[in-house]
Length: 211
Ligand SMILES: [Zn+2]
Image (tube, rainbow, N blue to C red; front, side):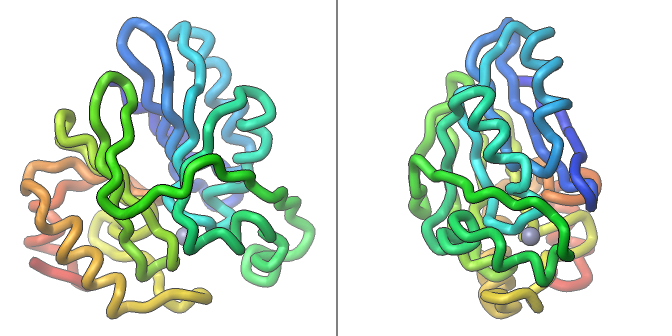
């Protein structure tokens, strides 16, 4: 599969558009504001359509573009039910996001569970529930590709903030140790902000949670 990194929106949140070689059904991981303008030309060029939108969590900077993506494509939305309130009543985040932002509710088609297997791009993808940054944080693990999409749980040299409503450093640390650091060291990690890293590098050098 091809991984297109599409930083979008006010704080350059990474969206990842995963497209199959040769065209077919693509998957979008997270939908920051205005992401559709970056997704559309790639889908057209690669003769692909968007089948699914997977949300790593309900924070506004990952979901602001979701309603537009769904309107344009009919993509099925996957998220965790512990972020249901954020997704369905995003206006409660305006205090954090800043007034004047337009945040539309996101309609979720599938509430994914920890350990659930999803099928995409001809492979099995394992969902992990990794609370701590957000109660409904999810990660998506492509074992065949040795690739993990970690949302705002783990970054290169950092971890997600835990001072927002529903955050907990204790939960975050447990999520990282049990769900991420248990993956093979060579697993590439694609986070919600900043550049990629690997499980092995973070286990060795992450100053907040080391292996
Ligand atoms: Zn977040």
